Image (tube, rainbow, N blue to C red; front, side):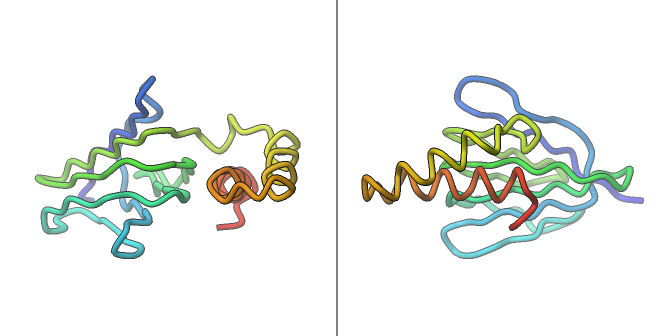
Length: 124
């Protein structure tokens, strides 16, 4: 079975690396699904979950805030300003951040909190 090699990197660290059957991400042009042999693409990421369907049938979800993705020769690089694996997200803390951002009318913080919660709870 064909695979793509995926690297998810944030400004401060490497988040995840491995082989995948498919990756779904949200770009400024809309959602994109990338599978082996996809045409080369460069896209600007919107805040949202990036879902990696691994070659062994698993799923990795990363909350991504800004950055871009690049795909060529069955290699996908996701370069994010900020990124967190779903299992690293403290749901209670993210819920508190969401409530605080709503109270302060901070749309950017509200969107980041919503993305973190969506990634952590699988509600994306």
